[in-house]
Length: 277
Figure 1 (tube, one colour):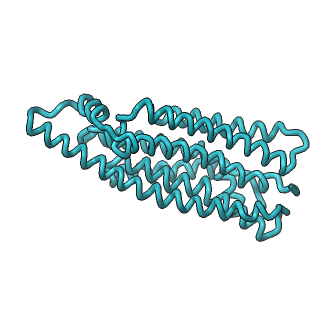
Figure 2: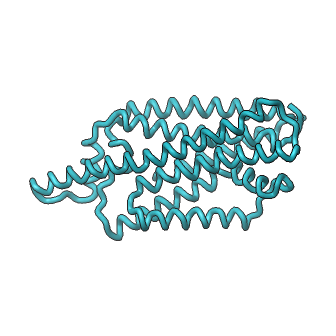
Figure 3: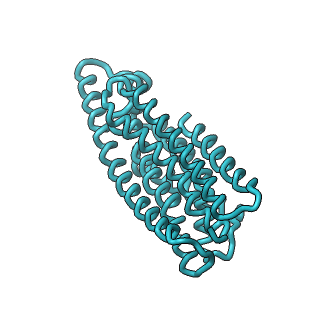
């Protein structure tokens, strides 16, 4: 349920934007930049509105991190849920970062090639999935795993790799671009580092806070009577939290992550079509 919308949303996003770029007649750097900028604006407005409506509609679903509300006990069921969720999250990132995979490949080949082989895509997916499964086994906290994926993987591949590749292209003189394109990679690189560090801190801070609150509630319930079932525990934990600010932060971070994926097209537009602006 968590990963299905990500698959559909990411596939539609990248396929529609790339289709618009391919359908442009007499493609130039300026036209590609305009089309990607319009796509970025539309996605930003949509995600911000979605985040605001979500935070107003579901103010009780988070104690800083919505995944911390899960009250599934440790065991086979918890391990299966963690592995499944992390695997789906990793595979969704493979779909989301298709332009960034292309940028990384061009960066490693110094601009000599733009295509990614199917074997390379399969290896990237297998590596990401393996890393997520290992994190799920050792961390045993789906909140930290998903948050770390969003902070490190998304920021690095969606912002930092395209920025480094754009710097490499300008260094070798592959394409001629104005001074604005020389400034944009540094902005992307600094924002990627900032989002990665902030997201990593929030992953551990909010997950620890949410886990402490849930453990306190479990202790209180154990003192009163028998412990509830996993389903009852999840519902009670989700409905008992009243942290409106934390919920708003989660939806805002989700919107930012979506915007970062769209924003990566900006850094790739000039290098994908190396023409004068």
